[in-house]
Image (cartoon, rainbow, N blue to C red; front, top):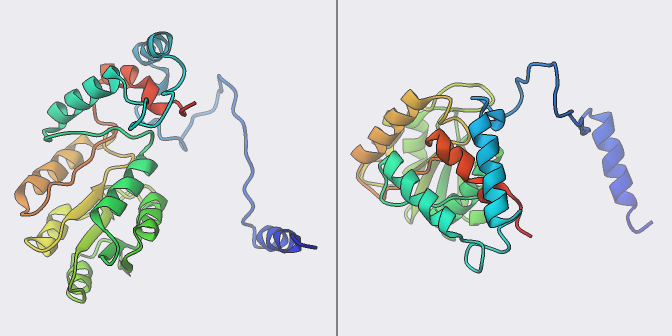
Length: 242
């Protein structure tokens, strides 16, 4: 069979207990949701749902194209200006998800031939970003700035240190100040806040202070710590493009 290997792989996954199944949830559930990214419960906030409905009525049910073609609306531009102002950054760029933002950031900051130093506990989006960057990736011990410093010493060309800000699986925070010190005057640090900024504003503020202190390119990104009114108005950013 031409595709017999697919069945063999499927059987191996079932035997290893790696098969996952979809479990559709109802609109209203009596269960307490501890597995979603809706940490602050904004998904059902009246201001958010009304804002999303209003945006859909005004702008339609999709972006209609990529950002570079027809997918950028005046609402996107306004949102990005306010996000940049709120986060104290020169500019902001909105992606459809934190996953997409990490893919774009890592591939942009680590061109072909770069050395990427990645924390062992990083999110899958950062891991995939390292793969797409087509550089040389060294995975170092979790939350270990000394290991990052040592790994950076093995490269001669462009380099990038990559880490979650708050690790979604273990819940611990990255030692951002120590990481910045390990990379100071040498390489940029990409500190992903997906999707924990809104749930940990104090840590995010510390991360922003760290990014302002270190000498190097300012590569900061914040997806969810924005005024609640913008959470309501960003609907076109989260709707798959037609």
